Length: 210
Ligand code: DX5
Ligand code: ZN
Image 1 (cartoon, rainbow, N blue to C red):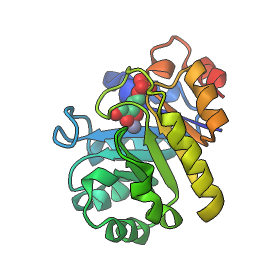
Image 2: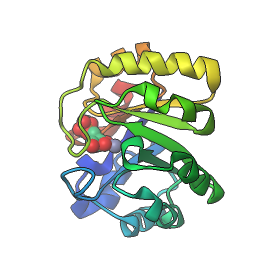
Image 3: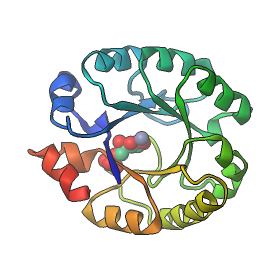
């Protein structure tokens, strides 16, 4: 099980210190929001470039933006190792998968809570990870949507059939209780923001999840 701290909940006034507080994490989850696909605005490639200077962790970039095809090259050039875009934001999904691969990054597709897993089934053999949003994208600190567990179970089945090394990532409302449920359902990676960073001891919180 990989635990990916979401820096959305970190202190952006002192990001280096916040990232230092989760230095044993293999992955860092970075939420990019454009105020259009979701009703919130966060960061762009310049911040990722800054983080890349002092972190050798896997930078797992979650693009909650419209027209991601316009920006993926910039994010990869800035240092993103893995790019996840939203199925709901893209017309030509296969073209975008190819574009990301061409630049050498791993590819993920995310679905909002109301989007059916059926809609992305065809792309599973072509990608590295699926990110199940277990809250409405846009903000940290929301409550886990229990129905997400059915999506994880369905994905586990598709993974066994079509793509054994697919990573099932779950993002939103992860705490020690929901982490257990996600793990039992088949999740490989858990993204957690407030649970880890709203704490005096983020490393201890990561251990607890693990
Ligand atoms: C929400 C983001 C999440 C968020 C999770 O749109 O994609 O990554 O940071 O935050 P918590 O863990 O607080 O639900
Ligand atoms: Zn996220």
